[in-house]
Length: 467
Image (tube, rainbow, N blue to C red):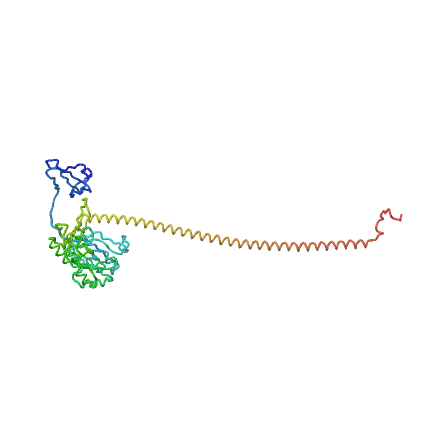
């Protein structure tokens, strides 16, 4: 049943004399349920692992026992380490083309088959975008090493561009270690200071400065040695598996020694860490106190948890065939398989899928960028051709205007010449006609004067006296 279906069946007392229970399956459970992992099969027959809980309704409790092979083996303590290889601190970047080889060259403790597992080894830009090796700014990935060589691996952090950071099972900072920030300290100075003390465990690259790592139990003494002029509150005595508690309403007159004595008298094995305000103290203890109230010098003190031990959350895992990293051993001829967990494999698969999707998206973006660049280039070429054609048209217009002006000037000049010529010809013709007329008139007059009248026949003149 689901949680909603199971909540419909409520009983304050057993309703059966035999064993009777409801199996609640799902992701959500009630406050009184105790979930556990249950092997099962999906609707299509694929093996899966789900979360379930039993709600008892009978006099005899129902227990779950899986009918599958069960094995109990011993395990070795190991730690997950986050790895960074910075290009800016590597002499020749090509030497990092195989990151595990580069890691083995500079960290002798991981040579051979010392690594338990590696995953998510990829190259990135400083903008946190995946990039090919030749354009990348750093390597990033995870490795798992045995706790036997953990200190040796951590002590090489900060050399040859390699930075390692231990992580817990939730991929957070491992609380077994502490980092002492070194303000205004360059990398070479931090390396010299770290080499001068035995308890240091390498250099840590913080956001804007460097730090020196060490075990938490050595942090107070090492901080006092590294930064003697700095003020700090001692926190020695805190172990990695301790829970932190806060004591409220502590008398201000009670110091660290007085509080330690008061805790001993109360029967609680706890260690004062530091004061937090004028009437609050932080204490570390593995176990819970018998009571949450104390009386110190007539003042009632309240005990509250401030940090609980982290519990591993249940994970639903689907059984399927996966690819594993295999390494051939030249000496023995055997094959070594990386013992990665399914969680790591799922993360690696998700990371690979995301990388593939990012690569496809980057390819599409690159294709679109090329298309846009081509369109822009073609547009620029067309605009340049249009400009050239406009320039040619303008030049031809100017040339035509010049020719038209020349033709107009030539026509005007030719017209004036023709008019002048015609005027001259008309004047010459007029003068010639006038001369000819004058000559003709003079010739006629002369001829009339030279004629004899006797030769002329008689004219009848009615007024003549002669008969």
